[in-house]
Image (tube, rainbow, N blue to C red; front, side, top):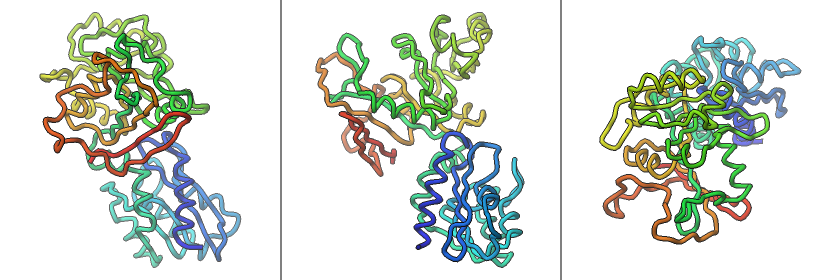
Length: 361
């Protein structure tokens, strides 16, 4: 077996922690001795043991002389758990193979340096592209101190998100809608605008069995969220935050009494300052935001260059109608050469629908 083979297994393990480890990275580890896997592990929950320690604890024989395959550089600092480098060195492991370098200033090469200074052989960059990809959220947050933003929308083959009457349920089939709930399970927050709340009265929860609900963020400049809406009625069970520019203290108190948080933010020419909102979410430990808003919210997010990736569910349907809305409003670009280009695009089939995903360049 090659180094890549064992690293791919470590990647498979790492992804099991998706959504639950936020704002920590997803990490998987595999211990190999004399061509045999003797231990495996992954970081399962924020605050829980790291992948390296889980793999060591799973060993049924001594790891002395073994090789450790780990998707991310082992930590060398004291956090909620002790440094993983300490456990690795004490275990007698002789070689460590690493996928991604850790950009966290508390690590950033320090883990590799400690291991090498202790006499271990260290190989880096194995399956680096794949290992970097699963932690693009973590890397973005470390470098920018703001959440990673995924813009998601569903549309017809002629680019409509509703008919000319405003009807939109359902554009896509069950498979695509089920896939959306997997995104909600993975992302720390879900964001919509007030128009979506008023039009659809959505619940904005995760229906994945055993999944978790994201923080619900409602962009509501004038505090128009109805007190009888589903997001208000369920705020004691599902964390919900209203972002506003309003100074209406009475309305704010009504919402807070029902369990919602309210954050007052600056006003810009186009509405609530979304950049300030993302900064505020980052300060709350929110590492990722799934925007499921309508054209106004998505348009503002793209105009302000706040989106890192896009997920489009495309249905083989035609709505037609010059007044039927499209997914993204805002200013848009002036000429085709100014288009937002999606890199590393992938295409998946979901029943009769297609899912297109790409990163904003």
